[in-house]
Length: 85
Image (cartoon, rainbow, N blue to C red; front, side, top):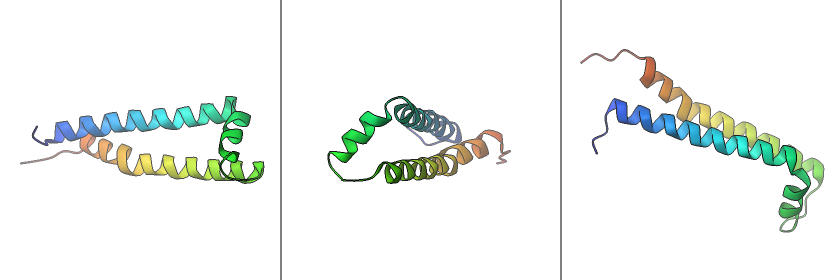
């Protein structure tokens, strides 16, 4: 398959949808099953609830920033930029 602007835009669009789905799953898991998620993680590593919450919220922010930076922004540039040949 040849890499064209349209193919790349489609790829980035689907990457954005999938990554935002992962982020939504993460948020819902922590919202509705926080104790279970904490139990799963503390079975491997001893950590306080405060540290667990702080780490998760920081990582959610980093993940969201990475999705915006590497998926959404290039998609929008390819979607709305005027390219001339």
